[in-house]
Length: 165
Image 1: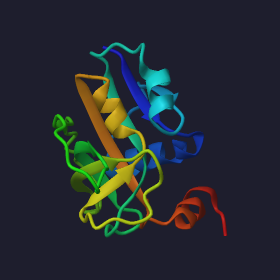
Image 2: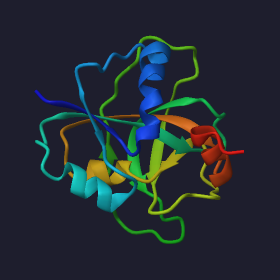
Image 3: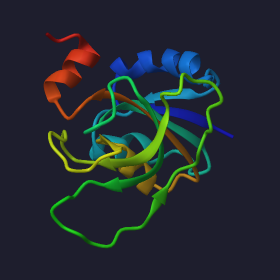
Image 4: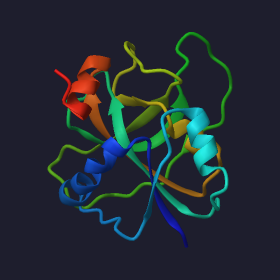
């Protein structure tokens, strides 16, 4: 069965070593795809992949209250639309149950947004811009690990991921 690692940008590649060293997960047999940021890039990059393939979405995410550097194994993904409520399907993810780690891995919901989230009342969750769109494509085996890069600050995100001062 085909196995893919989906990352938004080349700069997230550094997380692969962290996944192996900190979480004990070796994905050296998976093909790496850099999709680009956001829904349109996800759809264009992944639309032709076999839905039976095993997908690992690994990337940076923001959180309103998790410490920077915390690993989160995503259990479910939803769209982030805090101002309206409408019915959506539950998008549950497969769990990896990483066996190694320093006690910093959490399990949480991920809220995907079409823009960078700068504020939210949601706690104990992470925010990204791709995962809900990956899940909506219907992959049967989808896992996601997010590394908290910021506490809903675009400047902190850039500082953490690109060394911006």
